[in-house]
Structures are given as C-alpha cells and as structure tokens.
Image (cartoon, rainbow, N blue to C red; front, top):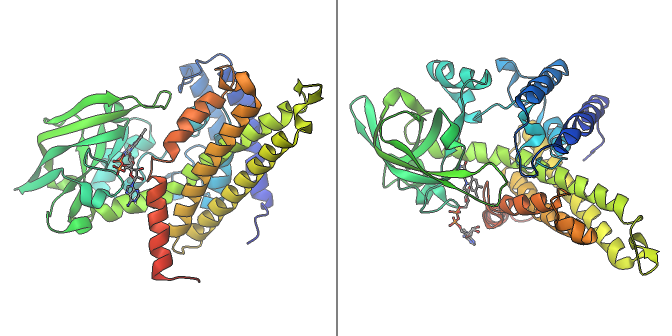
Length: 388
Ligand SMILES: Cc1cc2nc3c(=O)[nH]c(=O)nc-3n(C[C@H](O)[C@H](O)[C@H](O)COP(=O)(O)OP(=O)(O)OC[C@H]3O[C@@H](n4cnc5c(N)ncnc54)[C@H](O)[C@@H]3O)c2cc1C
C-alpha cells in the first residue's frame, strides 16, 4: 500500500498543521491547563478562518454542505488537529465544526428538519445513549432500558451511564430494548428530546478527562412518539454498530497526533538536557525510548490509514478499524508515558501538556469499545477466516 500523500493531501495537512501551531497553541498559554473552551471571540474568529479555508464542518457530507473529504485525508487531518494540549478530547476546540451525531444523516426528512439541520447550524446538540449500568462492552446483551408500544407512542423506562454531553443536549439517541427475546435484533434507536417528561440527568460522572464529563440518565415512563424512531423498529443495534466502527478511525488518529507531538517535544528536549556531564540524547536508555516511540507511531499510523483506505474503497473494514483503535490507543499511551519519563519532574507538571495527555489517553483504551473488545472483534474474524 502506498502511503505517499497526494499533492492535495500535502497541501491540506500543511494548512492544518500551520493553523494548529500558529492559531491554537499560542492561545493555550493563557488558558486553564484543564480548559476545553476558547474565549467566545477567539472561537468566532477562528471559525471564520476555517470557513475561509474551506474546511469548516469536516465531517458533514457534501450533500449537507460539508467539504468533500475522503476518510484517509480526514484521518491525516485528525492527526494534525490533536497536536495541542486539549487536542485529545477537544481537537482545535471545535473550530472546524462538528457533524454531531452521524446517524442522523440516515434520518427521515422530518427528523432531519427537526434535529440534523439545527445541529449543523450549531443550534442544537445531541448525545449518544448506548451504555447502561449493566455494561457497555456488549451493549446488545446488556441493554435493560425497555420501550413498550402504547398507540402512537413508546413508553421508555430505564437508565444509561457514561453518556457524554447529555446535560447540555437538546436531544439524544436512546437505544432501548423493544423485543426482549431477540438479542441484538431487539434493540431500537429513539430520538428523545431532553425536555420530555420522565427524562432526567441523574448526575454528572467525573472522570480522568479534564472537562468533558459524562452523565448518568434515568427514564421514567418517558413517552416518545413512534415517529421519533430512527431507522426501523428492532434495527437500532446495527445503527449503533455502524457508527462505532467508523468512529474508531478518527478516534485512533487523535491518539496518533498526540503521540507525534509528545515525541517531537522529547526529540527537541533530550539533546539540550545534560546529566552526568553529557546530553540525555547520548544515553542508550533514552535513545531506545525514542526508537520505541517512533515504531509505535509508525505502526499506529499505518494501521489507521489502512483502515481508512478500506473504508474509502467501500470494502469491509471492521477488523481494520478495531486494529487501528487497539494499536493506536495502546501505542500512544506508551509514547506519552516515555516522554513524561524523559522530561523528568517537568513531565508531571501542568506547565507541559504531558500530564493531561497521560490522564486522558488512559480513557482511550476503554471508551469507544475497550481494548479487550477490539481483540474480541479481531479474533472472531481470524477464527472465521484464518490466514487470508
Ligand atoms: C469518559 C467516558 C465517556 C463515554 N461516553 C459515552 C457516550 O457518550 N455514550 C455511550 O453510550 N457510552 C459512553 N461511554 C461508555 C464506554 O463506551 C464504556 O465504558 C465501554 O464500552 C465499556 O463498558 P463498561 O464500562 O460497562 O465495561 P464492561 O462492559 O463492564 O467491561 C469491563 C472490563 O472488562 C473487559 N471485558 C469485557 N468483556 C470481556 C471479554 N469477553 N473478555 C475479556 N475482557 C472483557 C472490558 O474490556 C473492560 O475492560 C463512555 C465512557 C467513558 C469512560
């Protein structure tokens, strides 16, 4: 596989790289080390710039007004966009715009009008409600939230946990069991307005992540109109799965970007820092850490671009996406850890971004399907069709 960038890709990568270095990183000197929001005026100014660059709304399909960017190029840009302190969970502080919940591109016209278009205009936010207290690794079996039909409505009872952003959302996707005996074919996706009686954000769940906390939700006799079903009754798990598979590629790319930045900082630092009469870079113990970083980064980048290329070609990419997610999250965790070690005491201060990356990177091996689940997906494929 040829990983050489096309002239157009090189141009875009350079553009975004310069944008991050010249526009985003300088602002972080004046932000709280745990912050994930820019000043409103800065954000508005930078959004104008990304619009002028033709890169606003990167994840919005061209049919809805977004730029026409394939997944390989999108992955290359995601690798650039995370190369700053808040980059893992707030790449470029959102100034490239977001597409919100990708499932809504499959919504019917009325649903698009009510939910998708306001999200694209930045007027509404949505959440993705799959995980429950009974478990997130195998949601098809774990979902206990129940929806029972009552005329033109469904009555939903149950709860969700670890749901990002539900306290600031106007609506969300809630996956509920509609056929108890039917496993993954008995789950339906409902679009739920957060002002529906019976919907409650029970509490905020704080995690290692700096700012974007998660929430716990409860639903008590929450009545949702039948017309708010996304897709078909009992087809919700396929909707969730499709999104999770595709999302693993940019998720991996964000980790690679942080690893690259940490590694670059270490490469600049170790020739300057002297101990026992010689620069750190002259020590084999340090050189080996740098070598291991380089290999970790290259293998993650290769696997992630391979997954994106397969998706772009319209081929099955579930196994490749699982490998990219697994390898990039684990490799980037090791890279950040080694870089902290090379920076010594400075590595653990909030004067440098390593401690934030270290904390937030830990979540990446659990969120969007933990490492064990990715291995499970890959193993299933291997055992079904060993040695291709
Ligand atoms: C900060 C944060 C934000 C999140 N945001 C969202 C969100 O917006 N929406 C949403 O729906 N979910 C969200 N999640 C939930 C996340 O997807 C789940 O935490 C994850 O899927 C794991 O589920 P669990 O925590 O219930 O772990 P469990 O399913 O209980 O698993 C526990 C551990 O056992 C391991 N394990 C599971 N099965 C096996 C096996 N067969 N063999 C070996 N090991 C196994 C798992 O890998 C895991 O390490 C978020 C989580 C976090 C931490």
